[in-house]
Amino acid sequence: MAHFNANEGTYTPDRLVIGTYRAVKVTIASGGGILARGTLLGQITASAKRIKSLSAAADGSQLPESILAEAVDATAADIETTAYIAGEFDVDAVIFGAAHTAASVDRELRRLGIFLSKTQG
Image (cartoon, rainbow, N blue to C red; front, side, top):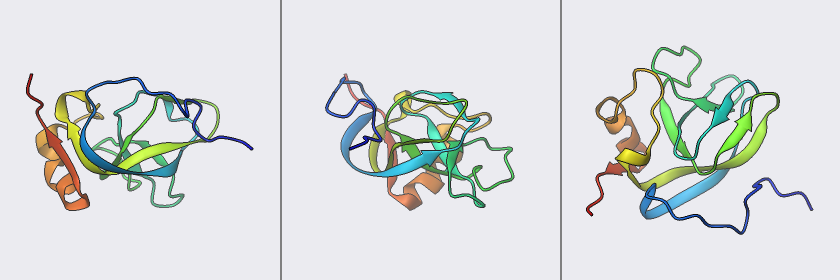
């Protein structure tokens, strides 16, 4: 049986997830490059595939809609992986695309049930 998550069964603690969350399987579009865990993703309207959300995009992906749950390399092929679609996340651990900031995406993310917070400690 093929696994879509290469790191399935492993856990490396970090500060990305700071509360409860919901995750789903997504496809990262080929040509998306190397993306780190915590990258803010947008969905391409025509294909429903995800790429790093950039505010200047005009293909639908300019609207952030999920957060990448694991690092991937989509340089040469589509990659099936996991993305968080709801939950609470450390704003300092989220990786924003060009011209996106926590302030510029906060309203859209809250509408989707994704909350960016500062952790204490």
